[in-house]
Amino acid sequence: MNLNMEEQELLKKLRKSDTGAFEKIFRRYFAALHSYANSFTSNPQLSEDLVHDVFHKIWETRETLTIRTSVKSYLYRSVHNNCVQHLRHLKVEKDHSKKHEAKLQEALLINRLYFETGLSKLMEKEIVIKLKTAVSRMPEKTRDIFQMSRERYLKNPEIAQTLAVTEKAVEYHITRALIIIRQELKDYLPGFLMIAAAL
Image (cartoon, rainbow, N blue to C red; front, top):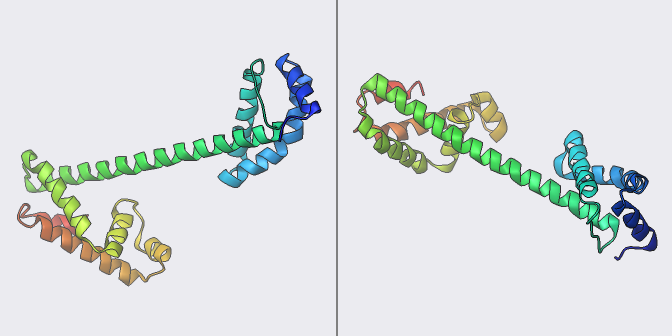
């Protein structure tokens, strides 16, 4: 769809910094664009900010703004891109946070093992590898429940409700996970049995 005569005139005025033309475009499309953005974010305030950002960029680049399709299509595409970019940014932050948390838990465990068992610092890398191996060896459900408990700090009732299983089942899988970890580390840490129980 190409620009109609009215849109061509609005853009012509906009390029000349006509605030009236800008406000007309804003009033005509803001509500619909906000609703569209909210279908992505489910957050009205965030959706409003994302749409405002699109209009802000339009005003900032008004003198060189080129729209070959309809104004409506241009705006919807811009809002769509803003929403997708924001969601990707959130995903990257979430992934980074998970990796950071995993490394933090790993470091805390190593420090605890070091001080309570006299673990040599030279063995740290090997212990980390053993821990990761132990987790990878766990059956999928056992691994998921163990990580929900130790990495996400969920309590047994919360895990049971999330996975639609009994609390007894959760306890079983956590115990099973600790047994696997103990078996993997038995040759390295004489005192690990006491520590693992409190992990």
